[in-house]
Length: 305
Image 1 (cartoon, rainbow, N blue to C red):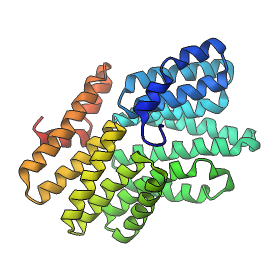
Image 2 (spheres, rainbow, N blue to C red):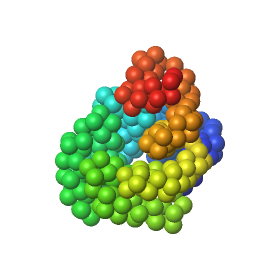
Image 3 (tube, rainbow, N blue to C red):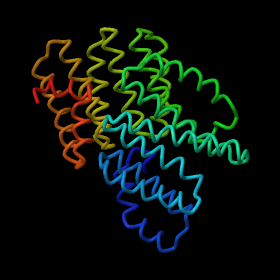
Image 4 (cartoon, rainbow, N blue to C red):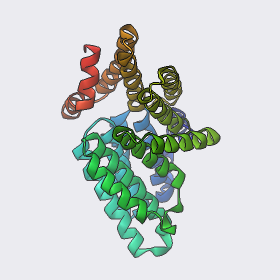
């Protein structure tokens, strides 16, 4: 359900299962469940619940030796903080995840593909984190290095998942640099794959990028259509961050076209999602850091919030 872009359904299906498995105490199953549930909670914007669940799983794995899932749990903890623009906290946990996974690759070569998947996901999270901080050149250098490393046969596990995220980030940088042809090739490839495999979150992300690319090529009607489709799909998924980014992209497009009332509506929609996410953060430092993040400030300023 989560992979198909229905994290809310995953949360619903796993309700109460953590307590049930805790009584049976199968560490592998329990930590795997906590990973999936924590990630799904984060994807629907329930960040503090996700953090609490993941920290519980980390504590169990550290106490009882659940090394395989420990790296995943730390990486997902980093993802939670990156969803609300807390880059330094996210970076800390993603680096720890990568360190754990690389040690696993060295110590247990037979389990290399499992550890390699964690290394891959941690690297993509790190790159997304750096991109949010405007460190594009550092991202590009890390990206090219990891592309070489990941040619190893160890990196086959869940490749379609982390490679799609990597392609999304690569496409963003290519669009910034004006390399339209290569960006279009990556966007088109991933849209075809996501539609074939019914992975809604990935489809929504690449539809937004397709719209941004069409705007750069002065194909405004196609751009507006693609971004509108992205919003509809991402509403189904329920991921706040992807949804406010899609609304902001559409708002920017309307601004460029001087369609000011439509632009205000989209900026307002993005700001509403942001404010709802902020209200879900009881930690004052985390909430203020989120609202003061540069991309968030830009949206709120345009919305007049």
